[in-house]
Image (tube, rainbow, N blue to C red; front, side):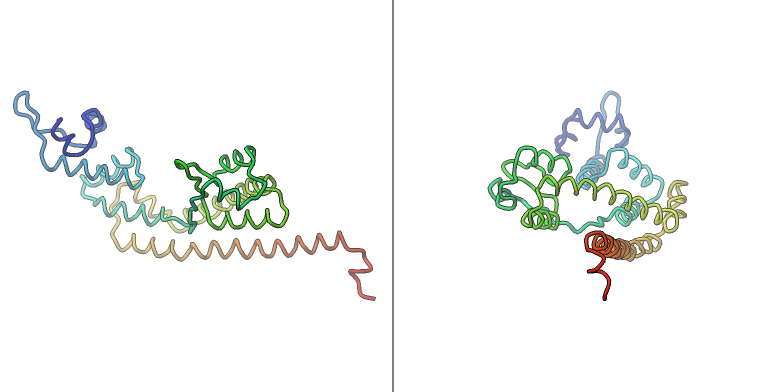
Amino acid sequence: MAELAEAAGITVRTLRFYRERKLIPPPRREGRIAWYDDHHLARLRTIAALLERGHTLGGIAELLTAFEHGRGVGELLGLRGAIAAPWSEETPVRLSPERLADHFTGEVTPENLAGALDIGYLAVDGDEIVHVSRRLLDASSALVDKGVPLAAVLAAGRDVRTHAEALAETFTTLICDHVLSGLLDRTAAGEPLPPDEIDHVTQTLATLRPIAKDVIDAELSMAMDRRIRAELDAWLPAAEREPE
C-alpha cells in the first residue's frame, strides 16, 4: 500500500480513504500480503485527473461504477461536458492594489472592498487582487467615472445578480423540460447513451446559448426604452411633450 501511494503521489491515509469509498478495487491477497498492480495505479491517476477537472468524489464514484458496468467514462464526461460547458465568456483580471485604486479613484474604501468581495467581484490571490470579469470591471469603472458612487454600483450589482439568477432559472427549466428531459430520464435509469446523442445535445446547447443571450438583450433593450419614455413623461412639462 505504501508503494502504491508513493507511485500515485498520495498519502497512505488518502489511499485508505479511497478504498473505504470503494473508489479502487480490493487488492489481490496472498495470505497476509495485499498485492496492488498497474490497474490500481491507473485508477488512482484517473481519480486525480477527475478531481483536477472539478469532479467530486461522489461524482467520480458514479462515473467509475458506470465504467465497470460497461459505459465509458469518456462517454459520461462527454455528456457532463455538453451540459456543463460554461456559458460565460468572462476574462478574470489580475490587479495590484495600486492598479485597482487607479480604476476607482477615491472609492477604494474598506467598506467597498468588503462589498466587492462579498458579491464575488473580487478575490485575493497572494499579493494580487483578481476581478472576476474584465467586462464588469470596465463597466464599474465607467459608471464611477461618470459620477456614480462605487457603493451604489455594488448595490446595483447585487440587484442585477438577483434578477440574473431568476432568468437563469427560467432558461434552465425550459431546457431541462423540453430538451434534456428524455435524456436525463434515461441517464437516471442507467441506460447507455450513444455518442451521437451526446453530440446532438452538445450542438443543441451550443445553439441555445446565443439564443438565450439574444432574448435577454432584446427584452432589456425594450424595457429600457419603455422606462426612459416613462421617465421623460414624468420629467418634461406637458408643453414640451406635445406639439403646438
